[in-house]
Image 1 (cartoon, rainbow, N blue to C red):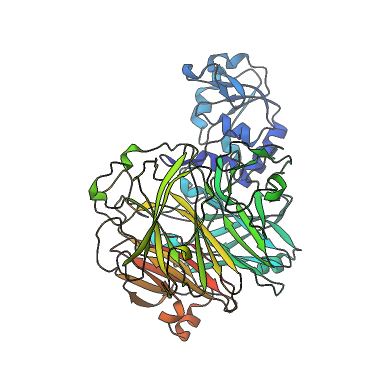
Image 2: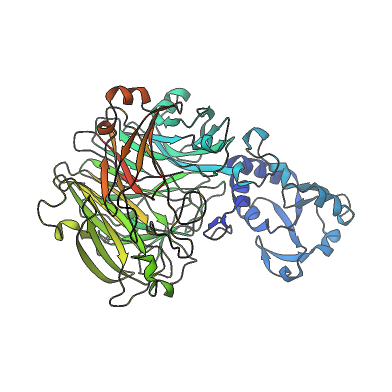
Length: 628
């Protein structure tokens, strides 16, 4: 397990981790370790553990602390010593493990061992042009970063789409800085692009990058760092993977979530005619040791380790069947990732078609919440996990509940199905599902033929009629299959409390401000290369809310200029399948261009959505939308 703290749901992200793990900082740390000799680490801030985990090359004589309660405890693999013992250290260098620390260095001056040089982590700060808030180095805005699964190998290309949403928070000149790593972790290219001045769209296509830098085929990861930002420190994007060899493959995934985790869950076992590849991409400048990553059948408790080292920033394709040759869908696996990787992608190959999706963070901090069994009637139906049911004449829709907390031993579930007008069509009680279940449910098994010809949606909810436990971290995988072409897409997400005036803990959530989350700001990219984009917008309600949404579709071009607006009303507990071509004219969409987008706004309720593109030949992509 890598000894780092990344993200938790109470304190949020750990900026110190990002400051030390950043590829530029990693280069500087490695250079520092080579030239400062034997070193005493002064750890007044508690940074020694992540520092030495992410750069183990320092020749450490000892770690020195001020807090007497920390004496004798392990800090970065070393027993913490009192700072009063520092003058006797036999070292060439004293490293004060803190940023913005000249005053600390000054105050310790008379306690430094004779002849020793004093340095701080200011030696490895990012260059000034990489900082959005230079007045405070550990400001989260200085580390708006993310990783992208990026590939252009002669068969597939990848296309990232996002927007300069920071312009809406007052940012004036946003830049995207990139480092492209190859499969072995080598740097293939580095470059900077200016974002539009306004809230315009931004596209990075692997074919363009490959031509720009004269690159050969590659499969690796793109590190992206947004600078000059304001109001929001997360880099969000949609990523399309599309065939370039005339093949039929097409898929899209959500952003990578930026934070390495101890475990991920929701990895499906392959079907009888499928191959599932887990793409493991090292997020750090230190190698993942053999045995550092393992897979386990969900609920089995018998992990199988990967006996292969993964070099710094390298990418490894792991065939799930190599570790679990007999495991088949609808069984599922969890990834014991040891905090080495951000949210991994997986690729499913079947019949000449591939689809890519992602696993989700499995939380170690969650326990069963008894309050959910006695939830006030004022919260209505409580936690909901909404997902689309695509038009049933063309598509099958299958749902696989996925445990997403280490302590989750069972989940009591019910499935409610709704027509677009919000009327409830039926329900299915799953029972109390054990952690080790293989219960994938095809909605064809409960809906009559001819139902939902234009689609609708369903919601997973907790149902305690026969007991069971709940933690509020309700997750599932949704699989959509074209009945004729065999093309499939899948997505996964978690539940929330939606559209109630009362609150329970931090629910309903809001993108900005405190709950209740009575607003919507969702990003819908436009189609590309002759493919048409679409989305399904769902208006979930835990309790009674407004009869219809007051939704606005705002069309923007690549420079952030709003071209036009169209209104849309969605019934409470209903849904709408939205194609931009049905709301905007060909001239308007042409003016927006392929880097344009639709911003879906609603100040009266929170909508939930899934988006994708359709190639018109039986291929499509589908994943949940992001907002800002």
